Image 1: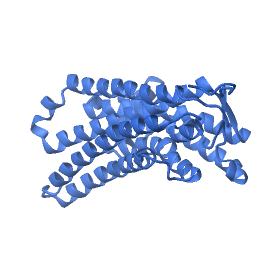
Image 2: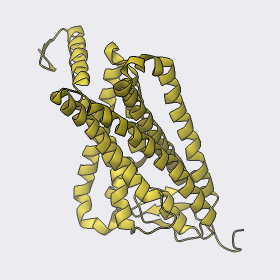
Image 3: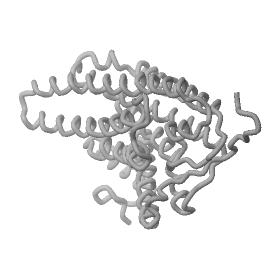
Length: 323
């Protein structure tokens, strides 16, 4: 029960990067530029995949959903981070904080599931090409996407519900740039042992299992690539899969280091730096790695550009419309 004569916290103060006050003027345009590139890049992916009929394969269906997810995922965090950098501290109401926490967990978990599904799709395409169209039919692809979103929705409820039931009696300063699980549990004046253990187990179930399934898929992919007789074919496939695996490792590695731990052992400043990777950096890297380094996607961009330029009566030079 809540102690008598103790008032509940109605809002939190996000401290953000207050230890870097002299750097905040520089950090604001950097994060703003990254946010702009992230949203623009993912919008371009969604538009091109939707417009070009040749990109309606399961791989690009997954990619379109990942891009849609990344826009909302980074938008859950970065706008408030930018406001924090401008105002040197940002107040957020208790309900808004719980809402941000829910959407952060929801989108983060959904991304884990989607990345695992995308790795499975690549495993089928490379290791079982003859059965790929049967094992990854449009119907199965749609079901896997739906499972990813619905499981993410459910995953977000438990942590945010348990955090919202905790007592917060003061202080109300969150030493972070968003409403994250560890700093919120540190502020609670009630016992957080059960909450901490439930979140720890849930993090293992989502992060470690998805990462393990993704890693296993790429192990089989690499073993298949090594049997390709052409050295150039090996290098091309290794380059693509290596880039995918690097981004996946950064995302899962930073998330696991933050949440798959029964006790808090990282300093707040280290936690903020790690959080920047999975909330700001990887949403930018995904469109670069999964599409802009993909020759098939770049050809689709040119086709869409030619089509749009033809509609407006202008000619195409390279990938651009010129009058």
